[in-house]
Length: 165
Image: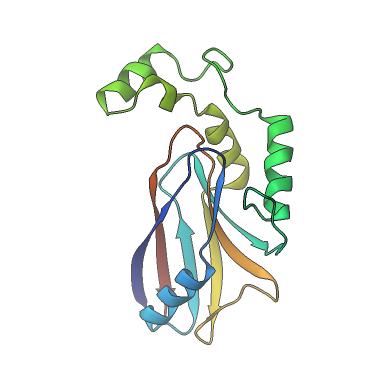
């Protein structure tokens, strides 16, 4: 059994949910691993980010989101509204605000409750089967990393871990 790990980096906009199609980068990690049969886990450490598999919608909005991505953002907006003001959600409380300040975040950056809640629904990882050295994503599947935090632009890391032989 072999193990291979890589870290990918992306930059979010901070002004709206940011979607990154990372399929090609993950395919390259599989190639770099030399593993022909196994599994590939794509994972985010960030609690306001998600990893998902979806088809490419091709058509894009004026803001650059694929139509399926915009539809997802709109659905989330209706069930988990974007945090626009202090007190809209119970989170963040005074203890978290103090903890965040000690770790370099200002108060507006802690108003990202919507990103935390949305990532719970999408999940922070995906596992894909590797067969004959290829990701088994089906005919239309692509891997997306989604930064749901809209408080500021951030550099994000994506972990790719491949296990197999």
